[in-house]
Length: 220
Ligand code: DC
Image 1 (tube, rainbow, N blue to C red):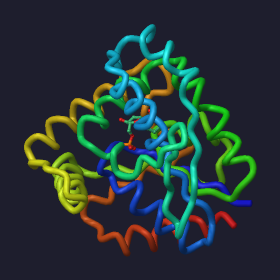
Image 2: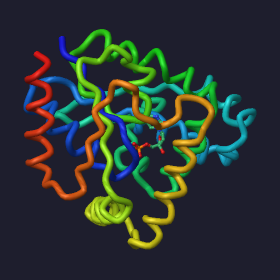
Image 3: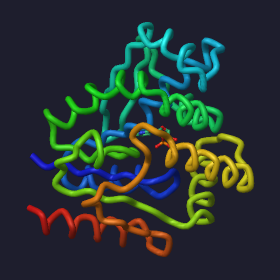
């Protein structure tokens, strides 16, 4: 069993790298942000305020989330419906960030994530994987990149999915969301004490991947 935690802010390259590392090692890639996006999506569908703990909590009992893995990609099924890219819409980023600061939401998603990490060799990406979900991970990486690099990456990623996004809006939303995620009271998006801080602003995906694989091999 090997368990790798990759945390960091949006656009830092977590999902691209985590997916590539999982493929290289033949293990499961778990995108935990998708879980918060799914709760956010459900709150949005029901027309509730994602900042209201009371309103969000009252919806949790009506949420059933399943994760499916196909060709290294994760699909999220909410109450029987495959959500596809619906959770990737820019509004869902803000909904996800808002609901992720609510303790009942984190408690609701906690056991599911811990169970995945207990039962499988995994690369998990998120904000609290090294601090809360897998505190004894074999390798913890906190991935960062400059604001400009991250906003550029996210804009390209969204546009490639056919989602209308301008660089300026993405940069503004990203900074706002990072502030929420970093400063919340519960499981803030900060590096674990034993995480390796890895700035990949000036690195290609291949260079970053090679470095992470080197770090994994060092720990085997
Ligand atoms: O990784 P992402 O951008 O898809 O995550 C969406 C939001 O979910 C992010 O702004 C904060 C929250 N999140 C979290 O609080 N903890 C995680 N492990 C993953 C995501």
